Image (cartoon, rainbow, N blue to C red; front, side):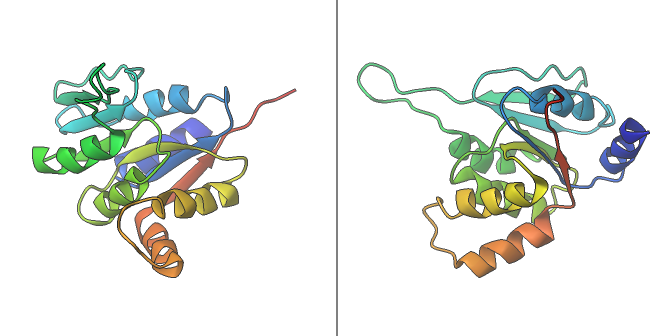
Length: 166
């Protein structure tokens, strides 16, 4: 029943944050939810290392990279989120938000990229929202904490919290 509900959320183009601790299956669930996105939609995935296995025809996979030995050529998740907005995506899927790219992702979710998905490390749904606020404040843009909270409230429709069973 939960899978049917989550599938309905994806089809309804709700913005979903998948939260949980290490090893709880965030990427596995993100992969499953991403597979529900209709085949005609243009999807951009953004990851540190390619783990998502989308089969749709219109998928663009972007991957961050560290600097070379001269310290040049670094491409961050934040760079990729910003650049993805110019690629006319229907949905943006970020493997994991963990820094200033969080603000860019929230802004994308609020400005026409409905149905976007991301994961975040958090121990509860409430903690996930607080973590998004903290991560968003790591952006180079100075934004008041309250304004950031409002941005999260307007951008995020659903938080799916995962945990381990003993």
